[in-house]
Image 1 (cartoon, rainbow, N blue to C red):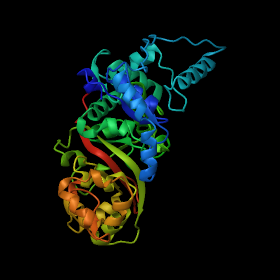
Image 2: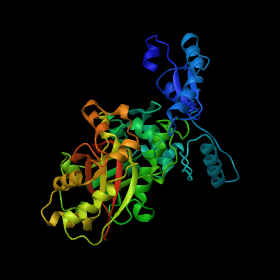
Image 3: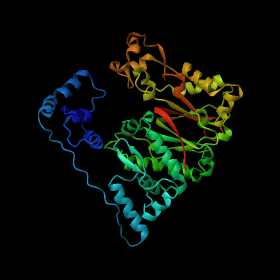
Image 4: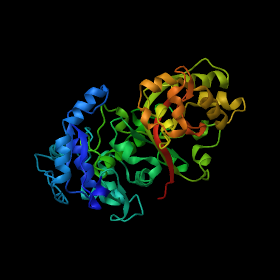
Length: 438
């Protein structure tokens, strides 16, 4: 819409009540100061066709007016934020609390207490990277904020990071800027999409990033995991402007959106490390960023063969409501999934001579879903099916279909401690791996 407006072609954006701020924020981020809106009363989901027609008919006059008259909706000029704020109280602790309340009122916090990003703390954080403060790491979607090293450092301070965490944060932000990651979709969706960081190589041990028991949980053993993941979320908010209710339109939310960062358990991995599989040298430190939607526990403490164990994984992955299950017939999206496989499960598969590719092939052929689940539910609309798959519209409803477009849409990362419990993460977009440079 903004590109059409730039070319002088009048447009009207149709949006639903509750999404107006999202539309205007997106327009501002893309440089459009005037935006003509036509607002329907609901999101038009789970409605019969006649109700959809009624809703659309009600805004036809608004659409015509927006196409023929100058828009009455004008994006306000953004005032430059001051370079610093001063908070005074009886003592430094009360001043920090007042700062936290002020930041939260302005939407800059994630709900947890923030470490005050004072000038000296930011300078110490920047000492952890060779990048100069004004270096632009990325222009971050969806709000197209300029992500300088200094801005990343400010958010890293607020998250509680240490200077040595900065190279991981910078590399993760670079990975998220890759179009394959689909940052705009991860940040803006009405789904609870969130990035998860997988760290490989020597830096994982140097920074004590947990790869074992409770790697995605709380506690001292996961300190680095927690603060690095939290910094990424704050950066998405304060640099990418993905604020809830404005550009982040998540319906319910998920605790995954606070922080998701782990290291691969390379010592217990019976295969080559994940980053080696993706073309990097074993001694190279990397971070891989996945966009994930939901996390599902996969418990199997009985299976003794790869076939039986992977059948449990296949059954776990069949989730009709997961977007990754129903997008592949559209053809224009690649939504890949992550298996965080515990060492006990990886050992069973590898000891029988199975490779990761063998496991992926098995999952592709055995994680099947009846067509009726996609035909009547989920996110797959008949009009969105690519031409090569239109024959599905007349297929038997009990026909079994794969849940992904190809075997390599399943990624296996060895994480966790003892006991046969793994996790399956439904995905969005493609993973991107970047070398961590200090």
